[in-house]
Image 1 (cartoon, one colour):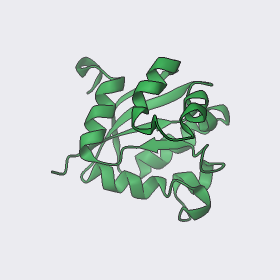
Image 2: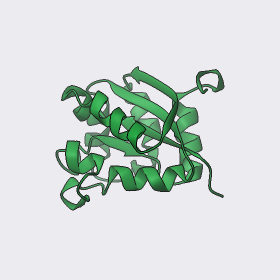
Image 3: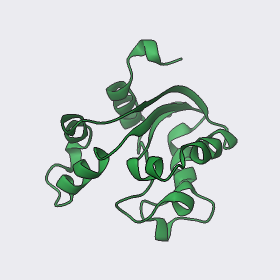
Image 4: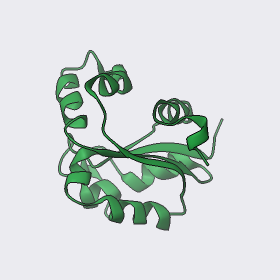
Length: 139
């Protein structure tokens, strides 16, 4: 089932480098409507829970450390075919492999510090959005 919402986070590396405005502009220019957004910082427990799917992977500890080192911008975006269209907008996880003009090609440093998170399915978009936002925070 295709929904019209997806979840994103502007990660600590992009926040530290001052790219929030430029990334939000690319998102808006691509036709996404922001229906929820907050500037926050993940606790270690939050990051461990959010990325629990990677718990057994060797990079899990580094991922948690990276995601808790500074603030993030969490947002729920709305647009037809939101998940697929947003994944195309952000580009490949490794910015060296991302297409020109994608968010990761423009703002990411490497595969670990890749500027943004984007949900990979409609189901995960709903789960991830609910992790960060209560119903009254979504418009």
